[in-house]
Amino acid sequence: MNTFQDLGLNNDLLQAISDLGFETPSEVQEKAIPTLLNKENEEQDLVALAQTGTGKTAAFGFPMLQKINVDSRTTQGLILSPTRELCLQITNELKLYGKYCKGLNVVAIYGGASINEQAKDIKRGAQIVVATPGRMKDMIGRKLVDISKIEYAVLDEADEMLNMGFYEDITSILSHTPKDKSTWLFSATMPKEVASIAKEFMHSPMEITVGAKNVGSEQVSHEYYVVNGRQRYLALKRLADMNPDIFSVVFCRTKRDTQKVAEKLIEDGYNAGALHGDLSQNQRDLVMKAFRNKQIQMLVATDVAARGIDVDDITHVINYQLPDEIETYTHRSGRTGRAGKTGVSMVIVTKSELRRIKSIERKIQKEFVKKDIPSGIEICEVQLMSLANKIHNTEINHKIDGYLDSINQLFEDTSKDELIKKFFSVEFTRFHNYYKDSKDLNLEAKHSSERDTSNENSTRFFINVGKKDGFNWMELKDMLRDVLQLGKEDVFKVDVMGTFSFFNTESSQEKKVLETFNNIEYNGRKVKVEITEDKGKGKGRKRGGGGKRRRNNSSNKSFDRSSKGRRSSSRASRPRRSRRK
Image 1: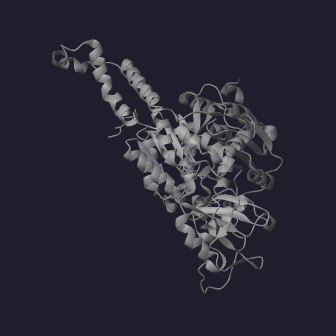
Image 2: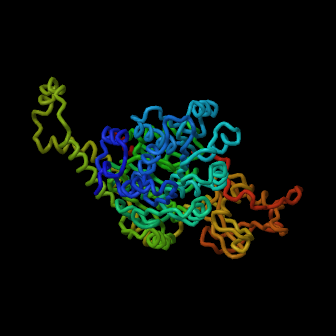
Image 3: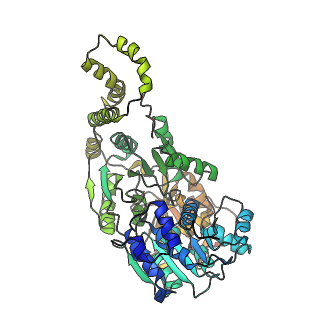
């Protein structure tokens, strides 16, 4: 393996690398850095495919820092990232990498902070701007930033940005940049939307792949647990209890489920927190700070809110509900097994969802291992031995020495075995009392009349537009969000057929959906939306449509595709946990 000295980096950057303690480059760094520094490839575009947590920031950061002119006040580099957290992280890392580059100014541009202050920072001479697409587009529209002379553009986590609906923002931003710039696209997966943006904005890009396209990380193992839909939350608690040192992200599909699961975990004594689009930026910052400090062990999050989470020590990702798209699963599992560490991705499924496990296996080229939900006695044993190991490995605090006489006097008639039993019974009894009459959740799954309750609070709709109208699932999902003015997480299970499609929303949105589509036309014909009794299999009888829907007196509205891809305006050392009462 090469060293950083072998990659062609200058002394300023090598000194910073030494200060940071980096010893050998990762695979993506080893492949990308020499390619981008090669003077024969001065204007070479690059597509780099590598899993999250493999060191992509350094892979494009070091070459950009070496290529820009720090003596100039002109903005020469633009880096677009999907979230505020990732934007700030990239900015901070570039500042560390360039600590010996005298005159370097890297500015972060993101929503939730003063746009005027950010504009002032740029005017002071920012050679590199790191930005979220929404705020960057806003600043360009206000003429607060000039990117007409940039030489290097980076699209970091490109698949995530496109999945979040930033396609139009990205294309608008890139239209303000020179055609002869170098564009470097970094992505964990290569769905067709990423391939299309590479084709549209890049010139014969060189491709670097670490591993295989769309394949999951080798550092992550994948497990699934089959339960009755009603037992999903009980299964989650058992998986957490079976792993006493768990530090995890628990993924739910909707904001409502995220908040509900987090609240139930907190009520049951777990160190948990929620992260979703309904949180203010300040609330989000507080939750993430607590998670990074490990005051929160189980972060319950939606896919959109979890974008940009970059914490290296996450031990488990738990899929409380499977995502709608397989690419999203790849991103979820990529939150663990980072920086050379191993991780586990767990999936809680019902019988009806087992076919989706096979689909994910084919896509990520990794095998899932079917495991049983642990029994109560297994959990008690694991927790007991975990406590014993912690006590065995605890360093003695000699400040306790002054109290030993009193303690010894209290236990002078107690044998060693009896003392150990008393001590460990304090923790063991809590778990034993909770689990002594617990059911076998696996048996419940095998013998229950299978019914997935994850969709009981959602409504499935039929709509008479489909592939023949030019829609794929992402385009239809974006269109529905815009027309209904709902957040990205509020429209899900979108299945596009030939001449019709299906989609789900929370049941509380049922009236809004029917009324919104009461008088809407597409290509001169009326759009028909009806409720279907099916909960997500793409079939089913319809009900509640036609004359049963409430009509209003508004004139027909046109259902056009001008909003395709638009972002929705909606925006989101562990203390011992107190156990069951």
